[in-house]
Image (cartoon, helix red, strand yellow):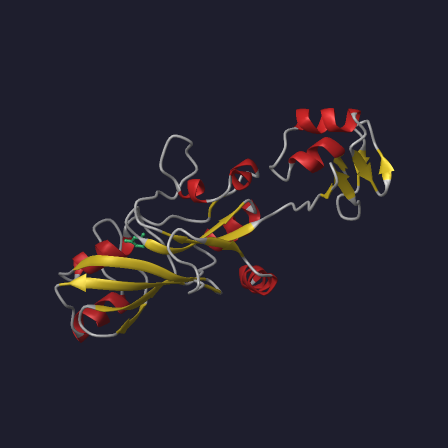
Amino acid sequence: MLRLDKYIADTGTVSRKEVKAAAKKGLITVDGKTVKDVSVRIDESTAEVIYCGQKINWRKYVYVMLNKPAGYISSTEESDKTVMKLLPPEYSKMECFPCGRLDIDTVGLLIITNDGPLAHKLLSPRHHAEKTYYYRCSPEIGEDEAARLCRGVDIGDYVTKTSRVEMIGGSEGYITLTEGKFHQIKRMFEAVGSNITYLRRVEFGTVKLDENLAEGEWRELSEAELLALRSAAEE
Ligand code: URA
């Protein structure tokens, strides 16, 4: 059960103060009846709330797929040029945050949600959610370097777990990790004598980057994507 003003303000489009004012004017109905007291508690799973003529689509959690462009940081800090600035402000008001981090110059799939428990599961090292990246590197790597990346390399303060590398040639390919140390892929390539020149995440767990999204574009996850992600997180 939720207070009516919280239920409406949770959508991130109006403040509780505005809700109170609208209620006084008789502009809110719950299950067909006008409600003037915004402190009443309603059943969020069944109530039909109309606010100023519009049906409220209340959701506890939201899940966004963003094709992150370069130049944005994966954080929620108000002051910075963050990925949250690429979404409508409702998502920040709903306390969404990026599920994991991509470096400022890395592009591609970033999931943004306010579902803390799911994000926690997906990011926990115990869970081993796979993340696949398309990379370009210079100088080229050969089969030996790729095999070393797969077995695990010493990146200074850590020896990486096994990964998968699918080479397209010496200077590009896909790498799949089950962990996410700071600058991990860049440091892995440095460990075998190369440098990452471009990095794009294309998969996170069961979710694939939607090729119809240009960099900077986003959409909410479909029901099927969300179900698959949730069930993978439970494994
Ligand atoms: N590895 C990196 O080096 N950078 C990223 O953004 C992600 C993985």
